[in-house]
Length: 358
Image 1: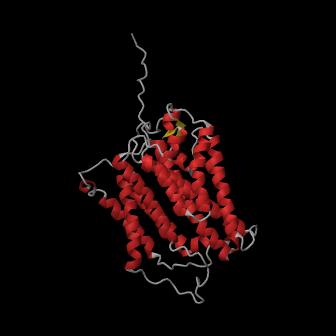
Image 2: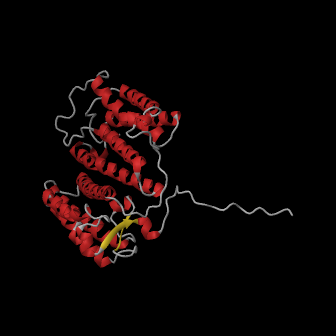
Image 3: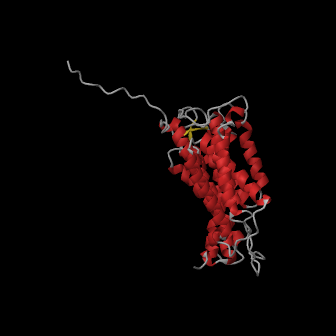
C-alpha cells in the first residue's frame, strides 16, 4: 500500500500541521460535551474535568513525539530492531496512563473491566501510532519503541484505578466529590472559561490554515517557494471568515472556540443577541488586529493588544474587556441567551395520577 500524499516531505508537512489540529478539535468537542451535559464547570469536579483533557492531550503528544519537521536523516539505512524496554521508556508511559485509571474511577465512575479495556485500547493506539510513523505519514518509525510499553500502559491504568480508592481522602482540605452535577449555567463566565475559548480559536485558526496549505502543497496546488505567502493569505482569509463573518450568522454571535465553551455575545443590558454592527466593531477592535499581527510575524504586539483588552476584564466582576466596554457588549453564557438547561439536570416531574377505584 502506498504512503499517504505520496510520502516524503509533503506528507510530513501535513502531519506536523494536522496532528495539532486534531488535538484542538478533539479538545473543543470534549469541552462542548461537558458544558452541554453539566452546564458551568465548578469546583473540584471542574478541575478533574480539565485534568482529563490534559491527560488526553498528553497521550496524544506522547504518541507522536518528537514529530520531526523534516525527513533528512530520519530513516537509517539498516534499521535496527527495537531495543528492550528500559526504565527511561517505561516511566513516561506509566506516568501518563496512571491518571487514566485514576480519573476513570474517581471522575467518570467506571468499573475495573471498563477501565482496563479503555487503558488497553489507548495503549495499543499509542503504540501503533509510534510504531507506524503516524499511520504511514512518515516513511519510517522515527522513534523506535518496545511493544512492552503497551503493557506498561495497561499496568499504569490498573494502578491508577486502584489508587483512586485511597487517594481522595488525601486531597487538600479533605475528600471531595469528584464527579460533576449539572447546574444552571446563568452566572457570568469566568476568565478561565473565556481563555479556553480563545485558545481553541487560536489553535483552530493557526493549525487549520497550516493544514490547508500543507494539503494544497502535497497535491501540487501550491508552487514550491510560495508556501509562506500562501500561508499568510490563508491565515488572513480564515480570520475574516471565522472571526468576522461567521459570528454574524450565529445567534450567539460567537466564534467556534467560544461556541465550544458555550458562550454568547449579547447586548449590554439585556440577554439578547448582540446587534451585528456592534459585533463587527468588536471584531475590528480585537480578533482582526490580533490575527493580522500574528500573520505578519508580530506575535508580541498581538499579545499586547490582548493584554490591553484584558486589563479591564481582570478587575471587573462581569469580566468585560475593553473592547466589550467600547462596543457595549457583554459576554454571557449561551444558556442565559436561549434559556437552555444542562442535559443531566434533575427536573421535577409530578407523579402520574392514579385513577381512584372508589
